[in-house]
Length: 589
Image 1: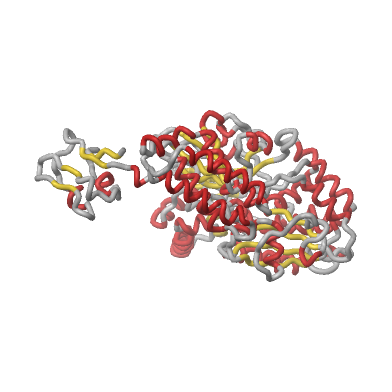
Image 2: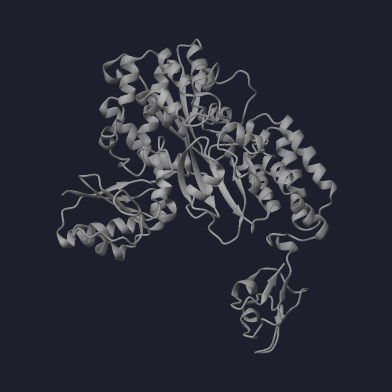
């Protein structure tokens, strides 16, 4: 029986030591003179369990092991080849009980259909999984109008944040009169806690190329750009390889598949400016200008890149296209809700067990996303909120956990779906601090073009900073709302218009927490440093002197084997004493 070993070598795997694991596997096989092929793949989404190693045979019986260490690979390989595979650390398997089998089976993988299954550097792997069959069907059997109608019928909405109907967007660009049109893939993923686009580009770059080529044919374009931030070197490397392979095989370039359709694709590396995720700023960056938004109309479909009609979609949107064309709009539309069809990819981060990438059908309740697919809370502290949509989004509290995942339902909470970042927080999280974190990010990333975005966010940040230090006033809460409303009205682009969302949602659902900071001068979560106090619980302190020895400012005094004391005048509230005490004798409040 033939056996194949796959090693996950995406960014998450490499960071966890997958490169060393692969080297150990190759060395062991060489030493034992075992002829077992070893292939690289990317991320299956279970970043929390990296490094991941999969064994699959010609019967498609698969076992994926997680948390693999280089020194354990020999034992794992010997057991598998002996027909007695180890059951320890099995993450997913179709023949054994895998710890994440339920997690995996709860998903619907359309965008992530090939991620973790194919070698992203080999076009042959993509072709073996029906790769470029959709492009062939589109340009040889369908008219541009039929393709656009299929996209409209599927109900696919843009997965970059706003959720604009994809087919309608393509129709506008198709209808624009021009001898030159452009296609752009927005891969400038900048939200804290988001890594969906990076994983897809690293794991299945050809799906993006195929989706863009189909779009180009549909709207009448012969040239496209993938705008990817330079902080994604592995994604860019895989894109470069994939584009070169696609040219050689005739899926890019001139006379594609023997037709009159021509399409050239370029990669533009962005410098990491958050504002370049906004489509007009992105186009300015491609043109060599400073990335700043411009007034609309005209919209990109009429006048975009170099003033030519341009269609822009993000990575996840394009990754859906080939599947829809190949399998049909009706099949795609069976997933999701009436106004939000298909699936959605989320990057789970924060205080959640199964951190990583998931893809679930639209309409799944947030509770199931977090507890069923995500495995629940990582700590013993209860769930408090989930941040959706990054700096442009908002916090959804525990009482709204039964909200379903679709555009309208999430928007009704004050958050947004966004590109899919999902940061889970427990009761040890301070919501004032969360609002300050996201607003600080937005304020630093503002391009400065709009007065309200440039200065208004700065004033809001100053107020939040005062509140977190116990120096706020109750009237500051009204000022925050007034500033937020004016920033929303006075900002030119969507990034500025949504910048106040994290503040507004935390004020909406956690106003008592703000008041505790202002009135009681306390941080209920015990996070805001200026409001913390540390004291010794005398009946628990045994006088081991560990805290006194570690205190950097010598604020703790006391004799050996007798309760110690903390001098509040000297204490800098660093928390070292709290961390080193093994007897829970330091109280933080």
